[in-house]
Image 1 (cartoon, rainbow, N blue to C red):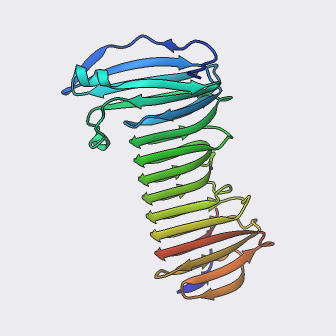
Image 2 (spheres, rainbow, N blue to C red):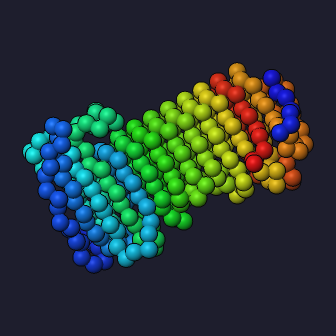
Image 3 (cartoon, rainbow, N blue to C red):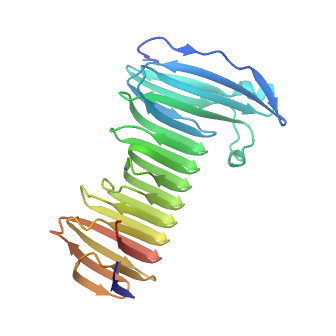
Length: 289
């Protein structure tokens, strides 16, 4: 039913690469760990971890700081894990390499490398990726591709194109994603002003839209959609659910179409268009507090 109710050539590092003092190998609970610190100078950065958690933040500093921890079941396996570098010109890629079985990483089992990366605010972050692990990122104004195969993504700052096969996505108020794609996982977006495309197979979607720069499409196969809109927007909302309800709280819409599983209405001049589709799930359109 539909009803109206109240209510983000070779490594050409610009200077030298510094390797900090290793903490040495430490045995913890049947596993062996080793900590390391490295610094790099570059203008563009890509990080591909494959295994373990990745955290990236920006700071006022002159070089890229990498603090990592390797964990494996024995010294031989630990030695197989390495952080390799590659680059061309002013671009640097950091990539985890080694003979790695990723089947148990979500449970903290070995082998894995966890990385904390601090990036100068003037460095462009092109891509952040991990096969299995949690990814937390604060990037910058240039669009970054942020991607996991299995693991949650949390974007705290910056502009990003976000992709994950299995995992939830959370973007905070300072982050402005441009697109989000996931097969299985819930999505929560605090500022959807730059969102062009949201596509999820299974999971609930919550998006707040304080402003809007372009048209946007939100598609989910199985999951509810909550769309919180500023009453100051100039937007046309076109929402449809095959087997769910559509509920619209009072935002001052000029209603163009309203029936079971279908709603279309405009706010202001209706300049931009937000298209919402859910095969199995409810759609709630509410005011942004």
